[in-house]
Every structure is written in structure tokens, then in C-alpha cells.
Image 1 (spheres, rainbow, N blue to C red):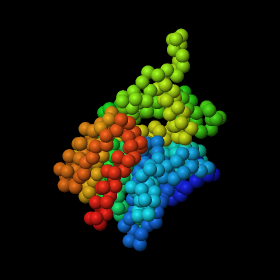
Image 2 (image 1 turned 135 degrees about the vertical axis):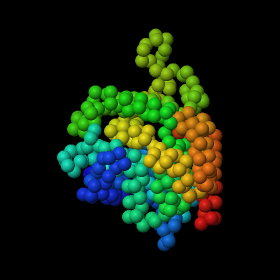
Image 3 (image 1 turned 90 degrees about the vertical axis):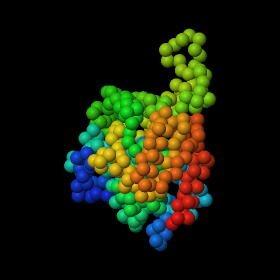
Image 4 (image 1 turned 60 degrees about the horizontal axis):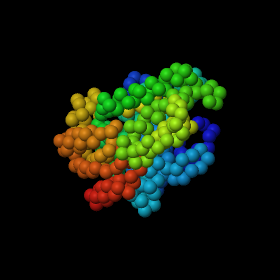
Length: 377
């Protein structure tokens, strides 16, 4: 929020008093985006890499902690000097998405028409709206064309939209554990998580920012995260780590005595509730459901034919949320449209979260692809 320590965030005004029309029909008159950068843009502006974050991520893709930044970078192992996304070589940018809660305009921001937080009145946004704000920032940074656009999960959705919306501005594309369009399974899980939030009486239609500490929809957001955390991982991951190990004594069969897995889910629910806004969770969760590169473009095949950037598609074999079928379909539709596609399978026990955990294997795949693109350039 304004007034909080910014840590390494920088801020750019994308819209200031001029209507920014959203795909779904809403309008925002003021938009600020928070972003971070690493490395230096070269004289020809040809070494810029955009890294797009996932649902509850933020612009802090790399780096340590500081006042205003409680957690280390979520891709610390991949971004930095001498690493796969080498900041001695590339100018790396990560942008907090529109509708988020880490410095970019979102539901907790003040509505200039009322002087109060948007809350439940914040308009729906889409991946295309998010990418448009990023394109304005790219202009401000002097980036005419990205050397590569990279993202996993929701970040992969943004990366794909970049390649479809602005093919002349994307030199290479890496999509990890993502999809050309949200599936029925993903939409079903998403709705269940949103219902967990809105059925918390303290959500109050999204207008809870004036409530005393602890009086917001914390329980609903925690439940949504518990639900999500189950399908972010895999059966083998949970079995290997927890099996049926109890946390409390189970000899009396008390209703809420817990197994270790339940304590783990509680921890992740509490962790998210401390750092994320429930309204942003709703807005971005729905934006993921709306993701479909073929919408209004004559279908997925026609949209994929617009992609000119060499593309790496990475699938995670244990992913039960963004199933390998979806990445195979993405690969096939891109190839059919004439895109040069590399396809890799990340063998992981960690399910969908593998792209945030299995860094050595993922880094090798990304490194090979980026090195090949550097030779072409």
C-alpha cells in the first residue's frame, strides 16, 4: 500500500486520468504498476527478458528480504549473475499484475471517483488487460522487443498472450505448466476456491478494508489456499512427505486432532492470508478462468498461428491441475500454425508446483533453449 516500505519495487503510471478500457467492459482511470528489474538494458535494447509471475506471486522474482518484502525471490535459483537467466547478460523485468496487491492497482487501491478502496467494485480484468499494462511499461523502459518472455502457470498465460498480441515484440517464448485455454477442471477448482472466500461473512461483498485487524475474510482465504495447495502438489509428494503421520494423539478420536498433512495445509493457508488480499485472489483467479487465446480470434488454432517466436513448452508429468495433455495440445497447435517449438517434460514428484521447486532440471531446459536463441540472434 502507499506509504509502506517499497523494498526493491519501482512504480510506473500506466494510466492517469485517461480511461483505460478493459476487455470485459470495465474502465480504470488510474493505473500504477509495480515492477522490479535486474541487470542493464544494452545499447540496442535487445537483451530484455520479461518474467511473468503466477497467481499469488509478485514482482520479486529474485533477491533477498527487506522491510516491505518478507519473502525471497520466488525464482532466486534461476535469476541472477551467472544463473540461467543471467543478469550479467540480460535485463530482466518482472511486473506485479493488474488486479494484484503488491503495489499494482487492484481492489485495495483507492477509486479516484470515491476516494475509498475499490473493494468489490473493482472491475474484472483479463490476461490481455494485464499484458497491455505490461506493454506500456515496456515502452517506458525503452524495451521495443523482448529477447524472451517467460512464465509458469498464470505467468505462462501472460507469456502466451504476449506472443499472440504482440508477435513482433517477442523474440522467444517459454511457457511452463500452462495452457492455451483454461480447462473445465481448472475452472471447477477455481470456483470452489472463490466460494470459500465469498462465503466468509467477513468478506462483506469485498468491502472489508476499514475493518479492525483480524476482521477481514482471513478464514475464507485460508480455506481457498488449502484447497489450492492440495491440487498444486501430487499424491506422491504428499505420501513421501507426510503419509498418515499424525500431529496430535489420535487415540481419543477427537474431531479436530490433526495429521501432519493437515498442519501443512493450515500453514500454507495462514502464510497466504498474511501476504495476499482476498479480493485480488478473486479477481486474478477469475482472470485465469477467462484465459483463452482463441477468444474473439477465430479459435485457438487461428490465434496460435499468430505466434512467430520460437517457443519452449514445458510440461510437468505429475501435474494434476495443468495436466500434460494441455501442454501437448499447446505444442501441437503451435506446430500446426508454423511455430518452431521445443517440448520438454519435467519429471517431478511435486505436481504443478514443480516449476517453483525443481530448479536444476527446469534450469537446464530453459538454459539450453535460451542459449540456442542467443545463437540465432
